[in-house]
Amino acid sequence: MATYTSDYMKRIAFLDGQVLHDFHINLLQKNVAEAIKLQTTRSKYDFYMLVSPYKMYFMEPFVNEDEKDANSTAVLNQLAFSINAGSWESTLLELPQVTEEICLVANFEDYVSKGAFVKFFYRTGKDNDWIPLQPDIPTYLAVPKKYIQIKAECTYTGTMRPALYDFALMWK
Image (tube, rainbow, N blue to C red; front, side, top):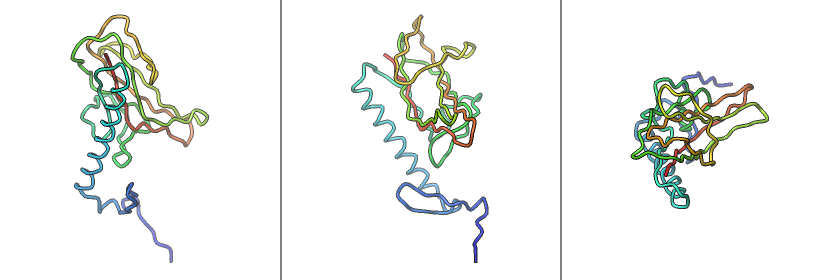
């Protein structure tokens, strides 16, 4: 006899191999998963900063929507801690001092041959135009700025979707 699992009872596989129904997930499991994602992401970018010329960074690990601008259309996947459609705009970041150079570092998967892309943009004020930003390539600002906002767009044309897991904006 076949069993039927309705949509609200879809199974969730955790990284440790434990499989639960969504109604069994409790706050403790959620908090542990978020803490692990935050710590590993922070450690990764801390290490990156040690071997790079940058001195500070802003990190978006996608564990909550604290640093998400109201204009964002992306929906946070709270199980994978990622986004895969729409755009995620950070809040307007006030840097501790003006900077001439920024660099975006990101952990993402896009599938160019299948039409699934993650694109990044920045702007230096709420009313300014978005400027394309390439990950892992330093971007030099014509005029030193103290405010930066980042936008990540996940677009796709077929059934394959891109995935953005985290990013960090670094500056000198």
